[in-house]
Image (cartoon, rainbow, N blue to C red; front, side, top):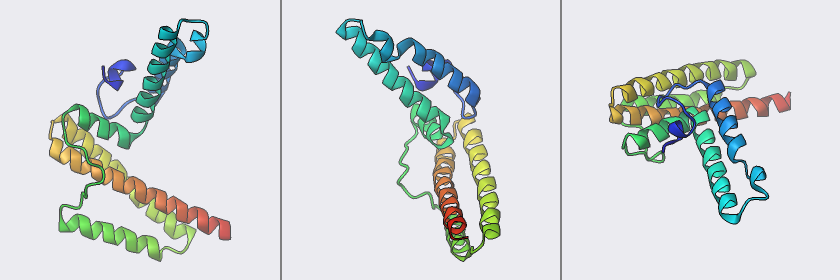
Length: 169
């Protein structure tokens, strides 16, 4: 049983986060180890294992990046998030441009502008992933997944720089 089935959700990249949380809480309330304090050892272990599985499923499905990787795994796609996604000169140029813009951004306004652009890029990569996955183009979905990983990390770097800059002011 996969994580989507476990939580009663449709197998899709785009999921309703409220439904995910609600399904998780319902399932977790059934299997939470605290409910099995007076049960026999086998029942306690089974409840603990189910609770751990539910936590892992919820954590995986609530993250767009993790959910994309999981969907690729389910579809039999090779997922190596450490492998470089820079498969073209355009992507390499884009990465270098991002780094250069981040290094040269020295105001909150500059960083906010960069964050807005990066967030739009991430939305586009999510869309690319979803479309490629729906049409079972696992190679393109894998490339979009790696772009999502990169851009998510880049956004974290921007936010870190924003926090550092705000702390100085």
